[in-house]
Amino acid sequence: MSLGPSSPLFTILPTSYGGRGVIASQNIRKDTLILSCEAPYASVICCKFRKEVCAWCFSWSWEIGRKGSWALTIPLESQRLTGSAKPASGAFHSGFRFCGESCRNHWLADGEDTMDSDHATSHAGIRGLINSSLERCITTMAKGRTKPKNLSPLHEIEFRWIVFLQDLEGLNPNIISSTFVEDTWKRAERLASFFWASTPLANEQCLLNKTKPPKVGYISPIMLSELELDTASFILSCLVKKCIEESSKTTSRIHEGQPPQYSAGTWSDVLDLQDNSLPQIQMEPYMLASHIRIWSFIRFVVYSALRDAKCLSDRTKDLVQSLKKSVDTPKDTQAILGRESGNVFGLWDRAPEGEDHEMLGWGLYSFGSYFNHGMPARVCFHN
Image (cartoon, one colour):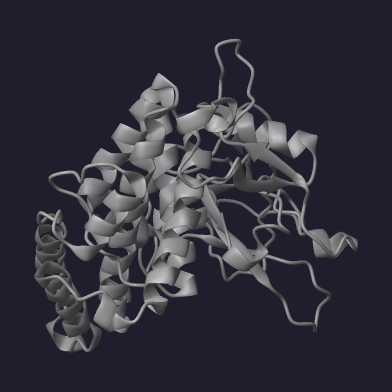
């Protein structure tokens, strides 16, 4: 297990209120910068702000009087392809926007998966592919929600899935234990892995895409709330980072200097954080159904991205296959959901004191999470 961030100014110790935290080991002068982190391990910009917030430095265009979206985007890898190789989404950019070339280049370099044969970073790689698939799946679900129900009869598998989730909505907190949660996730995994070739969703997509359905795939997801969709986007960001890391054998890095500047960390550093899933579900029982809906939707997104990946580079194909393995079971998604609660930092605007603030998104800074988020101390992160 990682010891977390280290410094002569503080130590990491168990706390009386749960998990580990930063304890000062000496008197620290006011305004002292004691930790710097180059980037979050994963982050999400809330859907309604994605055109207005830089994907790298999180600058909000409205704060500088621009009052509009950032124009600088980055293309999908498949923009270079023609004819039938065009992405199914019909889009030619990844959906990520930047306030300038510097942030765009930092974002590209951070991915480690965007190199062309000439070692130029010119496309969004798997991150762009997944983001494009995410937007397409949201549109698909929204359209399905408006269709008359008598035109789309539920298949038995879909009906059982809906009933299963509805039964979880009114859970008695007294029955929720680690065993109960584990058994519920196992049941969700069994239901989600049924053959789906005869479901209305599968038939409709096969007609549109002119492809044969896989033997085992995703069942039709239920429409998610705006917060659940943002959470799904955050989890996909984390899982994509994990797949890139495993492919490139990335290790946790500490850059020299005072104070120490940390990299975004590794998947192992994420797993070292406190898992708060059980107390969260015990406090808010409906979250168990929400978490399962999110995982089901993530599988939906990744499976939908598989077809587009067939016309991309071998590097992207391998990463998508790795991502598929990561979402076929809920284990990794559970791990992120448990650590997201209580460990992420909100990305807020800089409105003057006394005015309403907007939360633009949130990020997981693995090493910064050891600090008490509620303290008035200034914890500074540098991108």
